[in-house]
Image (cartoon, rainbow, N blue to C red; front, top):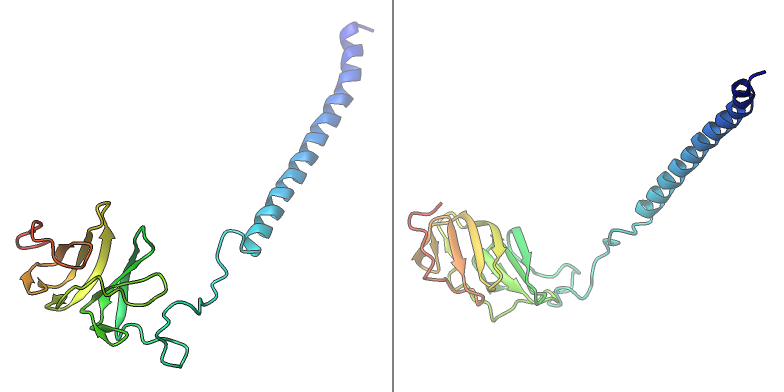
Length: 173
């Protein structure tokens, strides 16, 4: 017998065994990955529990819901200090007049340091808001005035809720 035939006789079963072992290891590894992924997401390892925070909005009038807004919130933004901008179609928050925009403290109470004055008028819907790095707030929606000044559909607010008069979009978006 030639040396090549002898070599192939010994190598072929080893190659088959290694190939079978690799397929089995791959199957076990795949099973472990699936099991780990399923376990992590089933146990909410990457999500919050979703339970209600009873310390948020302490001005609750006794029904467990808090007064909050008297309309709808369409958009929110969280500032770096933890305060929350809310905007939408409402005229008050916890009984205090706030026309379509308000800022809340991290506990849900109204931040009186943010005063939008008469807020938006016209159709009076703020649909979106964004925070700039300088603390100013861009709002957009269906409105024609902000605090009595013509601003069609877009406005820039100072961090205290007042209109930034340096930003004038003209006829709007």
